[in-house]
Image (tube, rainbow, N blue to C red; front, side):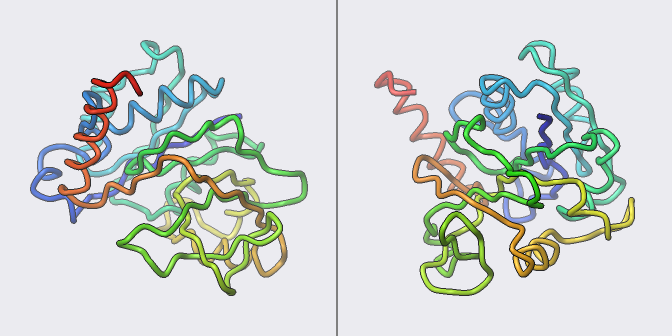
Length: 227
């Protein structure tokens, strides 16, 4: 299976840190956010990786190269302006191939084992859900009997990690900006979106304060030999 790391966002809430550094290259625990993903993907045996970029994207290519140092192969999907999640994925489909692929938001941090995430035949998407963080207490979707629904009680937050079938993006024109949520909701209504609940480590790095907190937590864990 191939994977895509979404790295095209401007990171407005992370300014001024992102004025000169793309968000995925911001460091926590001594290495860039995106490198944590690359290492975890490689550990799961996923070695074909596509990374999209827009804001300061050349820095990402210069920092990561072809991925050889992590024993992976990285290809890039540059965007003149960020195309939103679905638009960015649709533009990269020629690199991702015709089989289902894993997509990871470049601005989250997680300890999930990517080898445990899979998509059953006949479905269009499989989402990893997490407990609602303080900054997103209302959640996104409902996970019930391993299927994702738009409405209901006990809502969870979409982690930004999912597996998608290329057919999910057939309505998106290449080079066109498009959001992911409307595509997922349509697929949910057709009973084509499954999910799982990850109860381990997950952080959405949306502000400089949360970046600092995660960095301190990782460095403390490393000191204690927990990482």
